[in-house]
Structures are given as structure tokens and as C-alpha cells.
Length: 168
Ligand code: SF4
Ligand code: SF4
Image (cartoon, rainbow, N blue to C red; front, side, top):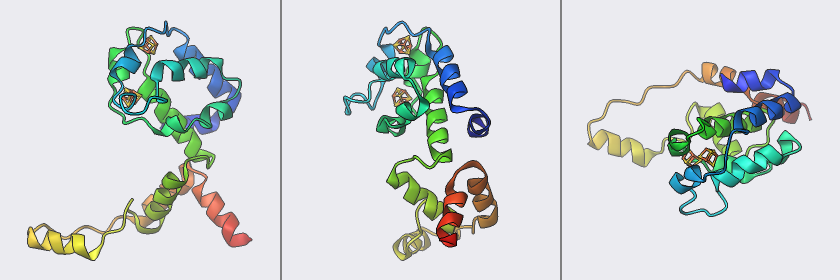
């Protein structure tokens, strides 16, 4: 429900709250030392990311950083932080906010479009169905598309942008 809370707050208010949550960071670097993504992607440094949020002058400036979407959600930074900072949650919130205002990366937009159209994040192809049959797996259930579309339209800008495209 983080995204709905975020949607109800002004961007300045969200930035102030994030700063209040993160200001106890004493830059020990434990989060970076344990981040599985930082091991292979040297610009995804949680300690520096926390500092950049504390120094940011707007929420849009933070959302420009593509590493908002790089987190593997392993929770190591959160579990190891002696200051109790839940940086995984901070990134969740930023991703939700980014999706609400339509600033997510193209790949995420495409995945959302597939989910909206089919109820799945990736289409089921004939090869996968054949494999399931060979393994004697049960039939894949049809998702509740209406419920999925309703949820996406309610918590993201997806529905709005689709309507705009249709109206144009
Ligand atoms: S582990 Fe916590 S206190 Fe240490 S740098 Fe990371 S966020 Fe800051
Ligand atoms: S939760 Fe994300 S930011 Fe934190 S350590 Fe794991 S991958 Fe890195």
C-alpha cells in the first residue's frame, strides 16, 4: 500500500519524509559491502545512494537514477544496517512512485503493458504449454484480467496514458 500512500502525498512531503528516515545514516558502508548488485554493478552503491537522497533537492532528481530499479530485493542492506534503515523499502517506495507517475524504464513499461493486456508478465507460448503437457502439469488457470487491469489503472498512470493515446 506504499504506492497509494505516496500518491496522496506531495512530492516535497515525500522527499522530506525519506530524508527523515535516512538521516541517521552514518555512512558505515555495510549496506554497500553486502549488496549483491553492487558486486557486479559499481554504480549501484547503496551507501552513496542514501547520501544522494539526503542531498537531493527534488524527488524527480532521485527518480532520474536508473538504479532505483537495479535492486534485487535481497534485503541484505536492511538486515545489516545498524541504524535500522530499511533501504529496500525506500527503493520499493521509489519504484512505486516512479510507476505511478509513468517514469519507469521502458522495459518495465512493456512488462506492465503485457500484464495489463494478458494478466501475465510474459505471454505463454506453445513450447511452454507442450513442456507442461509432457511433465503432466495441470492446465494454467486463466487470470482475473478485469481485477488485474483495475488494480493497474488504480495505482499507476498506465490507464490514464492508455486513455490519452486512445483519445488522440
Ligand atoms: S548500513 Fe545503514 S548506516 Fe551504514 S551506510 Fe548503509 S544505510 Fe548508512
Ligand atoms: S535489497 Fe537491493 S539495495 Fe539492498 S542489498 Fe539487496 S540488492 Fe542491494
